Length: 315
Ligand SMILES: Nc1nc2c(ncn2[C@@H]2O[C@H](COP(=O)(O)OP(=O)(O)OP(=O)(O)O)[C@@H](O)[C@H]2O)c(=O)[nH]1
Ligand SMILES: [Mg+2]
Ligand SMILES: [Zn+2]
Image (tube, rainbow, N blue to C red; front, top):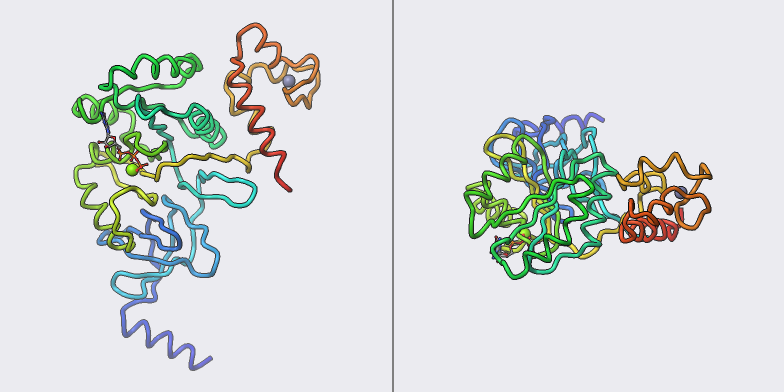
């Protein structure tokens, strides 16, 4: 006991470390995290204490520094929310403590409506405001179809913005700043839609930060391979994430799913059976609404698919 105390005291004296400090996780890459100290200064490369790492970008953490630029995460602060995706076998964290989810789509490449629908469900399930962004409207040949595919979501009341980050950067900056400043927003979307271009448009020194983080995390690549947080100049933050092809929502319950479809909500109390699954039940208000056009069959198909997927999980 005496020896341990001496060692701890000696370590602290030798390196000026040992105190518990606070910061925010700004990048995650495997078990490597970058933590921006609340006190300011350069981010530290941190590892979580213990084997299982459950740290997410956006987490507030307590850490102890082990050297000038390294530390150990010893505790994660309470989260307002945690966005993640999951399949039968594993889950993958997107980020914590979010306000908004910006779904970045483009005229080209062709965006997946399945992924868009799933991102909206994830936002609803976490009480995050979803915003749909259609980028690359300068690619005029593909614009009419993209607009037409988004009409359904406008009709549901979702905010749909249109920009060309490349061709009309000033207009894009004005539109995006209005919706993003002061909020913590994660950018989600398939590869090549323009998430990182958006970050660079709104955050002048993001490219520098990108390089700095790539080097610190020993990744050294320019493509987005890990999630990272950038502070917005006027307050709030953007979280850039790697493009994805799958968005499993196996962790949601049926009760959460049915409420994640805003057009279902006013109907749920009117099904004949209180425990209606809205799949085949007689007297189902959701199924009746499909028949008279109040609910689109494609949206119901997504709901049915998600219900099917969660039923595959061994709980
Ligand atoms: N024509 C056109 N191209 C654009 C526009 N915005 C971005 N791009 C291009 O689209 C490509 C992909 O942009 P990124 O910002 O890297 O896409 P991302 O969503 O971050 O992709 P991942 O990191 O792979 O997920 C780049 O070559 C951009 O130059 C736009 O408004 N118009
Ligand atoms: Mg990117
Ligand atoms: Zn029903």
